[in-house]
Length: 546
Image 1: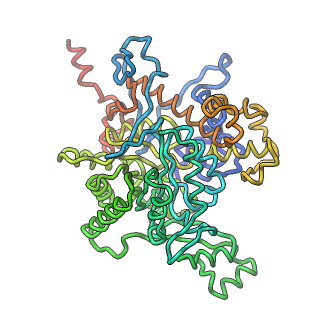
Image 2 (image 1 turned 180 degrees about the horizontal axis):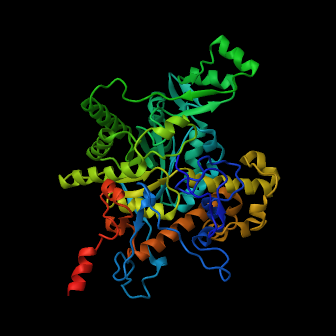
């Protein structure tokens, strides 16, 4: 694991654990008391774009070291003239070219376009218990911010209140809750995306979703993710629950039905069980058979009534990447999310996560190359989303530019969960009567928070903006975690606007590959993005020669 600086004196941030390139800790805790950049941005919002203690300090950046190939070794270009993408009758005059006039709305999709207020979406929030605990904060926050939220795999399968009839789902209160919480605050921007893995397909999740919730939901086929090359896992600490999951058809390890395993559990030597999902396509031996199966599945989902279908793939090799892009494009899918290694996890096997798959920037660079091959052949390219280790506004810019013009969204997993944790903990500390119900972890506000304030109106920079949107009466129903999510989204949006304005792009849809450069030759070779001093060098020499 590469190690990055744990603290940033300019922003006044620090990491509790091992820092990653994203700025997040390798292990992100729901009860964390701060204060990484994302954690602080969930409170202070766009104030975190600037150095602290203005008037007392000057600040300098140590940005000259760019070793290896990563998103950190891409640099964002700026231009000293010109402007494109201005909307609403604005011209290129200086009074119009303010960063606040940069448009961040975008859309994705084939026949049906899905609008988003920011070029962002969540990672898959599935059957891990942390997703269930903090879902209200995640879903309400994303709905208010106008970005898609992804309900991950196995939610129905682990729902003990779900009712089955003839091996198919008849009701799932947990899945219904997740969809309905988001839709309550949905205003036309964003979407609910429901994943479908092997167990979900067997349980009839697609049929249940389209019958119960109609065509408002996007259904997503699941090939994999950037955290692991096997199916999803959760850990359960109850023998009874482990037995229930095995009866539901899951692999549970160790086998809870074995007498010796039960004895070890009662003795305390065994404290938990791991529930695993099945691998897909294991009965298929060729690429042609995979394509045939995939196309048949898409056709079946369309016949059920789904108007929007997406695909999520992980950091497999180049063959699987090409298959995903080609098949999703041929089938007319609405979105393909490509998750590189570095992708987050709730419970992936750790050494697998550390050693498997293609790192995000390499996978994304090849994805763009393959998309361009399709386009050069006159074929439509499915809209893409890049995922795997993103947390900041510069990550959003670089990923969109690297994949331009095919990438429409950047998928953030753990980063968008942090405000949900933080806001919930603050709400539980300020309102002890709610703490157990909302899964708050703090009895009182820690000093890292109380130094900033002791009321939600003072703690969350976006509080008043959210209140304006929903109304004072409805504000009492908004989780603090959702307000924190909106606060983080405001910071990411403002930071992205500033970077786009510096590149003279006044609409996120106008971003180009030319807006980034490689900071070392190895990155240039692997990504196809030219080395920074080679960019425009020919133009510069022409000017000097003139």
